[in-house]
Length: 326
Ligand code: KG4
Ligand code: ZN
Image (cartoon, rainbow, N blue to C red; front, side):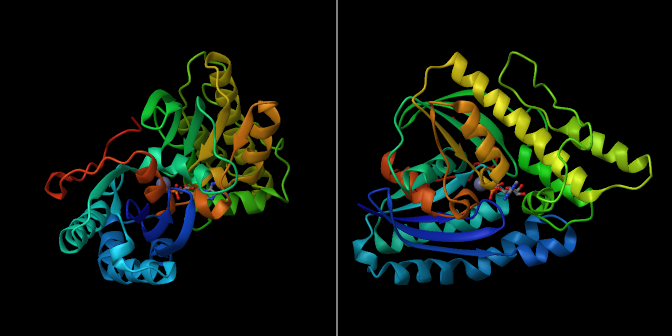
């Protein structure tokens, strides 16, 4: 079954054509990141206006690159949330219009569940039950995946997401948006023990996270004045975030019997997190998508749709900006 995926939950405008949930026939991503770098973060209105301009060319290119015709598509999958409301609307209204004109079923997709399906697009298929850790710019969620469509939310952040913590602390250090890759790059030259930063909630029994205190600790360091060794501070921030994510994920595998752990979301591109999580999990196999499939794109939107196929009438598709993973 061939599915066209459409993703516009944040600043990316993406479309992909996927065969049987696993084979990438095309993957087109257009990003308005240059505009957001000027403002140090995403202005939702600006993102949505850019997406209106490029959604049709992006979809056209995705179909063209797949070497297929519109009649080969069995369904259109589109992110309905969570995300920025204006951005989501661009994708949803485009998908609805195409579904109506092309007479295709439309499949609404939860962006967070879908992130996990990047792990179905390469190598061996993950086995259930699995534990999913979704770490993106807006979310940090631990979820037990009993089967396709059977998700049990185990915990999540009570304030900032891990990605947001990377982005905001990077901004304090004077780096452009998105800050995660910048912190990771700079960390390579730094000493991760140089600054003693908090690991919020790491000792608590629950599977929740909190990253706002870590951000405040970095603000306070800056306020104190004195010379900041940027590479050391970047490495210390990265280590603090990775320590909390790794510890809570390991705790979750002790509470729930799982065959695999699936890492997903933009922060899953972080090499330190990938390495340290794999080491701590020992015999439990860790699945991590290649970095380019971790950050937002439409491949995993179409993959989720294949494995959780439930077409509904296009008139009923609604934007759902705030929904959670389950
Ligand atoms: O999943 P994603 O592309 O978009 C959302 O759904 O939010 O995640 C974006 C987040 C940003 O916070 C970005 O800084 C972070 O992923 N990120 C990274 C890395 N690459 C992207 N964080 C740490 N290390 C990286 N290498
Ligand atoms: Zn995302």
